[in-house]
Image (tube, rainbow, N blue to C red; front, side, top):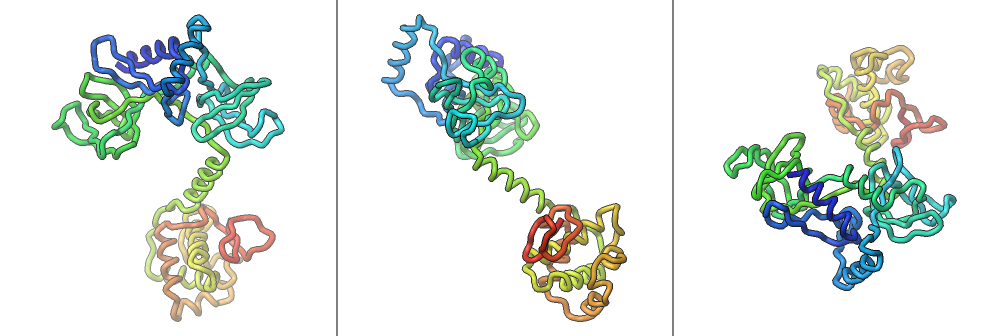
Length: 350
């Protein structure tokens, strides 16, 4: 049935303008109408055209002998292309349109196209774009049918039966990729890598192609990825109580006046070394390695170890031993100065 949707979509594209119209197609086997969401290809805002727009499009189509151009545009690149503020190579870059991404043509002039792709609106060089039938062919090849949930919570089942085992629940407005349609009642979907089944009564079927990104969105995403990498748990290390106390003592000596983040960072550096084949594989071995930590060499760590250690240092030591980190896999730190790295409080980590 998925193939039937593809063929149906192709027929719609060839015969009807894609200027943001919400289309519904009736299957040839007599099934009920099924919205395929063609408008999502060319108008990511999903706004339907009004009656006046539809009349204008009809008149334009008749004037062109029924051969009406679509406003679909697709990126024709291997990786990504720049989208700029103005129609000029020297203009500021405001976003990227990636391979197999598409959008809607807003304006064309002098070898440039102003387009909308998701939240991205700007000018792209025509040399890296596909238009007309070429754009439609690529969209049909790389796009995919998805179901959008139209109930508060949708049950995904292991078999197409109401009493079948439940794989999971999907909240309203979530999307799932369609594998195929079994009949009027059930649609098979990709649910976390498994084939699941949802009732067609509670979903809407749309056609989807990927969209570009603004530089603002790219920067936010990359910052979130860097943060996730820096803070990804590195796995707990089994140690004894003496080792925990020893690490807390070193943290106090190296970062006693810093914030908790600074304390955790020092503890994480020690534990990163413990996990690394380039250093001893014990906390004591790392701390007392020759020429590494000044407080360990001058006896300060030993004095602190035998006294009262602030709870914040204990907390940081336990967290670092349990795999928590805010410096990624950094194995060095020093007072902030000329060395490049991640600055936390008054120390830099790398």
